[in-house]
Image 1 (cartoon, one colour):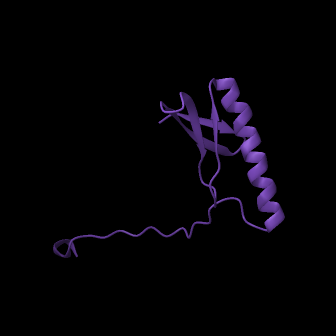
Image 2 (cartoon, rainbow, N blue to C red):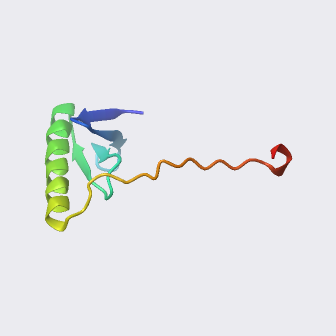
Length: 82
């Protein structure tokens, strides 16, 4: 998995042959934020812009920017093991 980090945020980076660009998707957000670039430098700049815009919108609307997790882990086992 190809990732890029900016502060406490990570993005998954993939190549999009249809646009001939790299696409980044910021992980762990309560909404979606992605960005595109042709080079690593351009990806970093667009990552910063996309994240800043996302965080600003969250502040304006009173939305928590990160996903909230319950901390629970569910596990299903076959009846024969119970």
